[in-house]
Image (cartoon, rainbow, N blue to C red):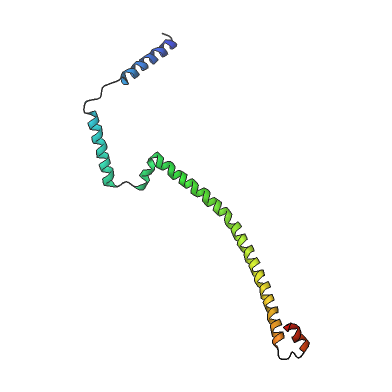
Length: 135
């Protein structure tokens, strides 16, 4: 036999073995009951032992939901982290504007107070000044 014939023969034998192994067989009559009994036993053992919370991550929908929530949290946190310095700068600018406005208002109040004191002072003997203020 040639090498090529040997290879064909081996392939044929392998195919026949696969056909025998994977041929359709009828399930035993109590197969479904046996499967349900094993599932019930595993569920009762699982509930008795108490599943840890991370076992829920073996369910694909929960796993993807957890991954999505984590990714969204990271994105939102990153955006917030980037905006913090901007907000601080705006806060400092607003504080400076407020302080300037208070200084201006304070100086105007001081001028008004000085003017009122000047008008009400008893040393003010110039009647023309008093008349001007009265009008």
